[in-house]
Image 1 (cartoon, helix red, strand yellow):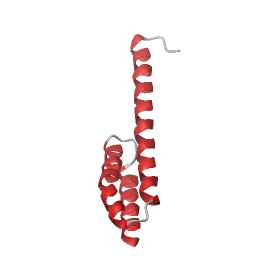
Image 2: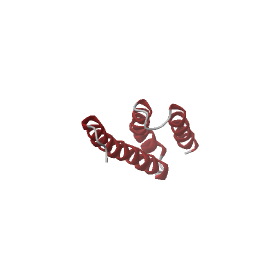
Image 3: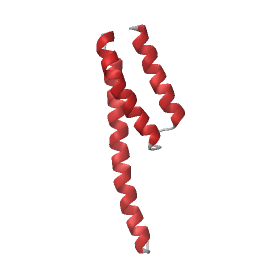
Image 4: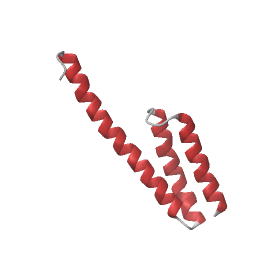
Length: 83
């Protein structure tokens, strides 16, 4: 266990942020899966902007890398185009 007061505070904030990041990442992954399960192109096109926004937020907050976010969005767009 940490000895310094600032270290104890840092552990507390890190845990809070870890839980929040995990929640946001899992939510975005579930939304991506939901989008990939859709068979209707119109419905998928409606859902895509919200999923893309979630992925962009993850990249902005450094939860995932920018290139991974770009690859995910590109893959989703390709999927929608093939419907």
